[in-house]
Length: 261
Length: 303
Ligand SMILES: Nc1ncnc2c1ncn2[C@@H]1O[C@H](COP(=O)(O)OP(=O)(O)OP(=O)(O)O)[C@@H](O)[C@H]1O
Ligand SMILES: [Mg+2]
Image 1: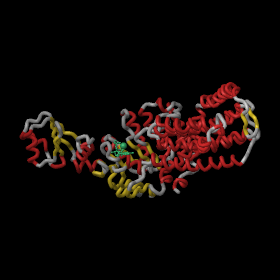
Image 2: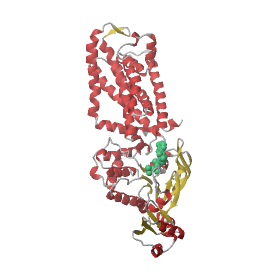
Image 3: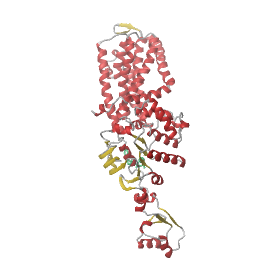
Image 4: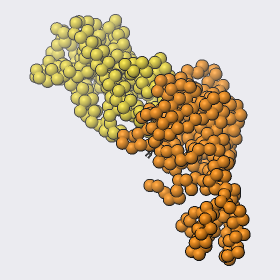
């Protein structure tokens, strides 16, 4: 397949371009992922959590804030990559014509998109690691499981970056991102086992929730934070890998169709 | 010295619309080759096919003996492109625009920095080294785009309207640089709407119109063949004068307010006219490429 053949290690030069821009503005980049989880943990975990008793997770009674913390990690995995490869990539592609400049060099369009997606996944990795520091400081994640959270952050980041790139290839203008955000990202944010356990939902809604990518990220991350590792985690990781591959190639295909005229 | 770009029956369709309509040309090593033509003629589309940004609909196109459909990566490594539309990286400073671009060519860091500094000097942008791109004037941006196109020491340089909107100083600087590059053996492919620019810089050129090549040749030869050495311009000619010129079988053109008579047809136009008419507002001037261009592509706006 020519899509595969046209991807090369040169993608990293695209990744490095985005990294360099990120590093020149890192002070503003680091603050939100650091402060946001603290706000959530305090307001929802400590405040709202007082109202919740008898929350049972894998047979253990836990506090709400313990349930919430891995959810926040999963959410940061989704948002890091999704924002980067939707609004971020669209601005570079459409307004800044950065992609046009790149493909006049030995880079192929596949290299460029791959580099963008790798960078999106890296954003998830960075943001999630910051949240992880906060969560660990609150005593809400355990060794050694938490060590693997960044790995899942990168894998999940690849999945959400590819998914976002798919929409970037399709939207007619930047305002149209409201649709995937409203119809997909926000429902995932709320209904992926992030803020409450899925088993409180009726059966049909549970089935629906299990189809969502973020559900699987949040399952694995929560188990890692609690030092569990069970069969369902392998299934969820397999889900992530399969959907990453599907979204990735679909986004390459659609981007080529959009950009090559 | 062979041909570095060869096109045969080159066609480009955008959906139903045919932007380039079966053109053929060959560009020699080390020359400056021009593409002229009115807006929408298909110049940029042709440029984009040469630098492998736009796939061909049909026909054949080789660059440095490589097929654009087979070896785009290798071709792109050997050419430099200054596109018509500005696509400098607004997130970076002037120097970083060059060094990050060098990285796309997999150039080693120290070498990239050295070449970038040299190119800033070459394009007289050293003072702006650390400014962000937005703060540059239009002319400086154009110069930076040309500097960027030279980062990989290309064998072929593609310049799509390099001087549009620039002041005379900037245009002259760019002309000097183009001639300097040519002396070093770089092949330059140029599009422009300035006929004086094409006349000065291009060894050979084509004039395109509606996707087709209308004419090809050296600027001097085109002028001689199509116009002659001189043009006689008569302001607000009387109808009798037009009838007279037509009866004589002279080579002429009637525009909205003038009569243009081209000298290639005959000798002593003015003398003959003087015997019949009272001539007040008449100009004799050297024929230029602009005359050829307007003659071939029409005097009215197409759109
Ligand atoms: N991406 C595109 N999709 C559809 N049509 C296009 C596209 N790019 C160019 N065209 C059309 O192809 C024709 C040739 O365009 P091109 O840009 O090659 O002209 P040009 O000779 O460079 O004109 P100009 O002097 O204005 O730069 C035009 O009619 C233009 O509208
Ligand atoms: Mg053009």
